Amino acid sequence: MLIEFITFTYIYDNNNAILVVMNTNNLKKYKQLREKYPCFTYEKYHISIDNEKIIIKYFFNINKEYFFEPSIEILFGKLPKQDNLSVSQLENLVFHIGMIELISYWKASCSPKLIIKAHKLNDKQIKWWKNIYFQGLGEFFYVNMINANIDDFINIETTGEKLFNKQSFTLNDNYIVPVGGGKDSIVSLQLLKKSGLEITPLIMNPREASEKCAKLSGFDKSNTIIINRKLDKKLLELNA
Picture 1 (cartoon, rainbow, N blue to C red):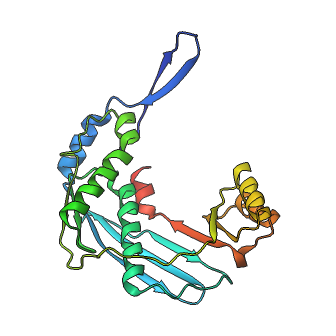
Picture 2: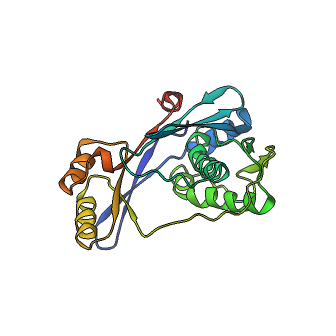
């Protein structure tokens, strides 16, 4: 794993210091990991639905040696259910959430090949995702002093059969407000509520501060969207 850091201090002209955390050894580790684990695979996903929640599980692996099964649970409480999503629309959303979720696990090996088995991507989509990954990993590459380039840092291949067509979704004028638990959360909830807008708080991995923010604004678990994102413990063990 790319986890050890060396700290450098740079001094501005006005004598104010800024700390930049970098690791001079990780380029070597990066190359070693890519050689040892050449392939990362997004195998599939599984969706379970009942009256109150959706449970999504993803299946990733590194070179068929390390297997990960992260999950996402979305609780709707007593909120009105949106039953107008087709199976294809739901699968489309879940699959693409998985395309983002996988990058946390890919960073454990930085494998040069990413195989997508869950669904098919066309050349335009592959190019788009490759750019998203490269731009999103900018800090990761910088902090670890990895001189990567967009052409060869990853090669995306798809073996899935189903290619999603462009889809439209019916939306309304309601607002979902992410609640982290800080002052921005409580201010946003209060201002939007006073404006007369129809809002629904969304809390990921609830903690006391985020639940208290929602409660102070008149919301509880029954009228809040709650998302429980669970990392696979093996990822934490690999980074221990």
